[in-house]
Image 1 (cartoon, helix red, strand yellow):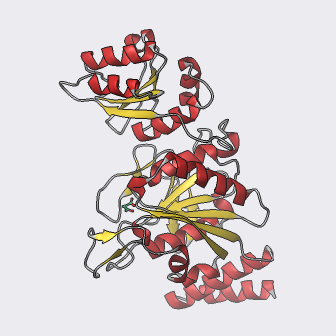
Image 2 (cartoon, helix red, strand yellow):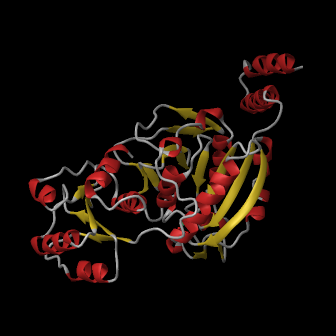
Length: 365
Ligand code: SIN
């Protein structure tokens, strides 16, 4: 039966009709699943965001309420995903992602780890607002202890908009999570037909549908007609090779980010230290440039046991350790974006506040 279907599919595909070829692709997919005897089981965890957002009318693209639709409504809106996987849904939260908290990250990491530890879960898709999507993705990249696919998707247009991008992003997310090819890459970000690593992919546009891409590190691949095409794999450690385990941790250490600029100050740094911050990421000018007065503030923080990471506001390239940074025991961020350096520093601080040890982590994650 399987072989017959495969033969029929290849014969039909050799004709030139697009509709017939699509039909053949569906048969091929079915036979693939039949070989595994069942469809992959994928759980969709909904966190909120624009993908679950609704506006007053179809032309409202930026004026809408994020985090309105439930996970059931998201799934029902894309019935095609049931051809790809046995899908179940779980509502973690329904918030705009600029309101994301460490507490919710810990809850999400716990839920993803719990789901993936069961043999009856083959992968997880997370629907999330795009503002902090990359941060949640990187947090999970370092705290999920499984090589099963975890794919995080969002949308730049609410579900009610003309040309809403959420449904196709969800479809591609489920197709990716249901594929063997997605295993072992860590957490993947998939929007607008692209597949990127959680470590590298970032939001690059405030409103365009094509908002997500990595900087120079490059894409891992593409989603085309619901099929993944991979070209690269990240060499940095994640998931099953990560040393971070947040199980039972009630809260993450506080880390603040300060963006460097001309005529900078130190008073906000002093205030953060007085408020109990455990770490500071300084998003410096150029290759981790720091205004002299600000450097004094950071050096004073470091002397008080606060771990300081020198990052860059530029977006491309790595930050190198300069003699002054080494003297002050500052950690350099490698090429991690400041918002991701913050996450690695938070996780590092759950284990140590020794800057040399934290520097080691920045060289491998
Ligand atoms: C949010 O991040 O929740 C709002 C923006 C979006 O989802 O695109």
